[in-house]
Length: 344
Image (cartoon, rainbow, N blue to C red):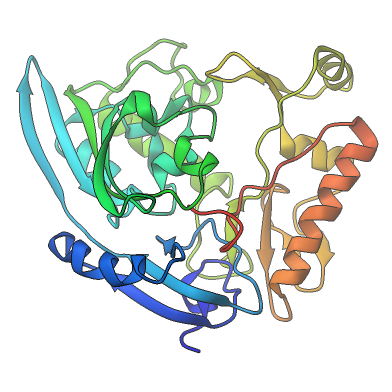
């Protein structure tokens, strides 16, 4: 057995992996993928490890760590620009690059940990913006047919924190993605009330691009939505539950209790997972299980400390979901990906 997955995940959990390969050069992918495909089992592909809950026993197969870097730009005319980013490029670095180049379209995704290649899997989004808003195509390796394919946006099955990559785990490995961004000194219209308040602008306003991007970073840091380099909250995987879809009756119950409800980009009503947990008595800093705590700034983020195991973390997720279901009849769905069970 080889390296520990704990050394490659932000939760710092996970046992040994049978074989760990690091992919750094896009041109060498066929040479890397060919023998792996010959094993007959699909590898688990790891980006920054910021959304991964690896088992204590490790992973018996091959893990490919996606570490390709690079961004290229091609003008399309009429202020439109095509941006191609390698899958291993940190998403935060891609956003910073776009803002620095005066390219609008992903400025509200700053400060989100993880790689660019992982973003389409979860359809990463924040402050009313999703990676799918400006994505035009994805280059991926199809493990079913053992070949590189190009998938258009319509092929990706995007929804709220959802995609074909997530619903068909093990089918594709994203190699790069292409975005269509706009040259502009202004950000895209603000559609998220919290961001509008932070910028002191009205909904629909288009604040200066760099100012809007910095406001997102500042707000995320203030609310504990970034990955700190040290301290009690350093070992985490961000939000551990999706905001759940609710029925009309559940919406009425949540609103009656003073809880927030919002409509997602698909038009579905969702409750706040963090609020639901707090109604069940959980608070920032609460101990949930051995070595597992809510972060010191927000209930929806679970952190690990000395003595934590992946088993304890998974048990904490089940307990929290059970508490919410018992209180409201609402089912919470975990966000962290588990090698061998799903792929991200």
